[in-house]
Amino acid sequence: MDWIRRTERHTFTRVPQAEPTDNEGSEDTPHASGHARSASNSSSNSNSNDATRMSAVPPRFVFFVVFCITIGGLLFGYDTGVISGALVVIKDEWHLSNTQQEFIVGGTTLGAIAGGLFAGYFADRWGRRVITFLASVVFIIGALIMTFSGNYSVLISGRVVVGLGVGAASMVVPLYIGELAPKEFRGRLVTLNVLAITGGQLIAYLIAWGLADVHNGWRWMFAISAFPAAVQLFCLPWLPESPRVLIRRGQEDRARAILRRVYGSKVPGSVVDEELESMHRSMRTESATRYRDLLHATNFRPLVVACVLQLMQQFSGFNTAMYYSATILKMAGFSSTKSATQFSIAIAATNMVMTIAAIAIIDRYGRRKLLLVSFVGMILGLILLGIAFIFIVGLVKITKDTCAEYALCGACTLDDKCNWSPGAGLCAAKGDGMFPDLTDACDSTTARERAGTWLALASLVFYVALYAIGLGNVPWLVQSEIFANGIRSKAGSIATATNWVSNFIVSVTFLTMTQHITASGTFWFYAGILSVGVCFVFAMVPETKGLKLEDVQKLFVGSSLPFLARGTNTPPSPPLPKPDDLSSDEGVQDTAAEFSDAAATTNAPPSITRHERRSSRRSSSGSGTSASLVNRDR
Image 1: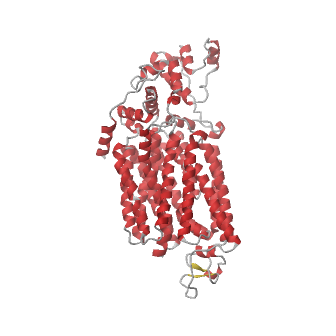
Image 2: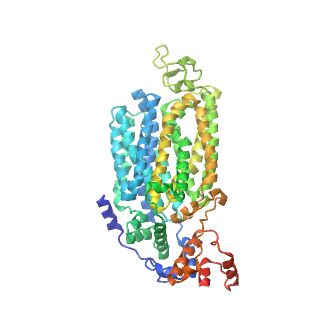
Image 3: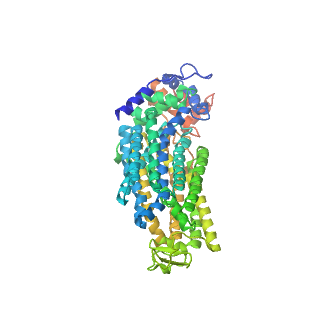
C-alpha cells in the first residue's frame, strides 16, 4: 500500500496559489483564512457569494478523477448485468435447476455483503484510494476464475470473489466522489457512478447478445470484465486521496492542494479555506469513530434512513428485472434466447437514458422529490406488469404434480421439469419422446397472449425508467451525504451490506416466488413493499441538495421529523453567543465565522432572541445579519 501513498504525495504536494479576482484583495489566498474570518461583515457577504463565482461546470481534473473512480461502478453494473445473458446459456449447457440458477446469481451478492461490510473499516484505516485499488485486483481475479470454471462449484466461487470487489466498489465509489466533489455539483457527480453502473449493464447485454450463439460465448462474457479493472489500475497513480482522510492524518497542505484542483483556479482561495475550516470544525465536534457510536441518536437516525433506502432499492424487485430480464421476457412470450436478450438491451438502454436525465435534474429538484415520484411510478409499473402476466401465464402456481396440468405455455415453461409442445399444444415432461418439438420458449399465438407480451414489455420499460430517475441513484447519493465525517465509512459499509443482503434475499427467492405465489403475485408483492417506502420517504428523508457535507448532519439533530420541515434544506442555526463568550477578539472572530457559515448555507437568517431583535431595530443599518449582531453586542 505504501507505493500508492508515495505516488499520491509526489503528485499532490505542490499547493497552487489562488488567482485574485476583481472583487478580492491579496488576502483571499489559501494562506489568509485569518484575514477572511476577522472581517465579519465583508466575510459574511463574500462567503455567501462564493458558490456563485464557481464556473458552470467543474474543472477537467474533477471529471478525470470521477471517470477513473466510476470504473468501479462500470464493473459493478457489468457483472450484475452479464449474468442475465450468460445464465440462459449456462442453464441449458449444465442442466441447472431453478435453485442452482438462483445461487449463481446470488453468489456475487454473498461476496458483495462481505466486501461492502469490511470495505468501510479498511477505507478509514487505509483510505479510499487503497480500497479502490484492491477492488480492481479482486475483479480481475474473479473474472479469471469464472472464465476458466469447469463446473458449477468453481463458477460459484468465481462469482463470490467478484462479489467482494462489487461490494467494496459499491461502498467506496459514491463515498469517494462525494468527499471530493464541490457541493454545487455533488449530486450530479455522485450520480455519474449510477450512470456508470447502468452503462456497464447495457454493455453487458450488448456483449451477451453478440455472443449468444458463439461456442463458449459465456466464458468470453466473464473474461471481458477484467479489462475495465486493468484500466482502473492504470489510472490509480493519478487519483488523489480524499481531502477529509488527509485532514484526519494531519496532512492539511496536501488536502489544500487537492481542494484547489477540485475547485479550480478561478474560485477564490477563501472557498478552499472555508471548506478546510468546515472539515476541522466537524472533526473537533464529532467523537464517533467506532461502530457502536452508530447507536448514538445523531448517528442512528441517518443510519436508519440509509439502510431503509437501500432495502427499498432491492425489495423494489429491480435487480431481479436485471438479473432475470432475459428469463422474464422468455416467460412473457419472446420465443428465443436471442430475441429475449435483444429486448433486455432496450430495458438496459432505458435505465441508462433515464439515469442521464436524473443527473440533469437531481441538483435542481432535489433528492426527496425524485424519490417520491420514483416510488409512485414504480408501483404503477409493477401493477401493470402483474396484469400482463395474467394474460400470459395466468394466476397459476407452478407446483403441479404432472406437466399436463398446465394449460398455458407460459406456466409450463416456468416449471423446470416441463417443456411445451407447439405442435400438440400441450405441456409435457422434458425429454418425452412422444413430442419431438418440445421447447422452453413460447410463441404468442392468441390475441390475449400477444397483448400480454407487449404490455409486459411496456410496463417493464416504464418501471425501469421510474426506477432510474430516483430510487436507482438517490440511496447511494444520500448515503454519501448524511453521515458525520468520522463515522461515514463505517455507516456506509453497513448501509451497503444492507443493500447486498436484501439483494441476495430477492435474487435467490424470485424464481421460487413466481412458482408459489405466481409471477403476478410476486410483482404485486414488490409493489406493496414500495407503498410502505413512500410513507417512509415522506416521513423520514430530508432534502440535502446544496448543503456542505458537514451541514447535512445538522438536519438530523433534534426530535422533529423531516416532513415537519416540509422538505426544506435548512439546517438548524447555531446558538447565539452568551455575553461572556465575546470577551476577546478571537471569540468574536470565531462567532462571526460561525454565523457566516450558517448564513451561507441556510435560506433564512439565524434565530435571534427578542432582546436582540429590539437591538437590531434600533440600529441605523438594520441589516439583521448575524455578523452585525455580534459587533453591535460588543
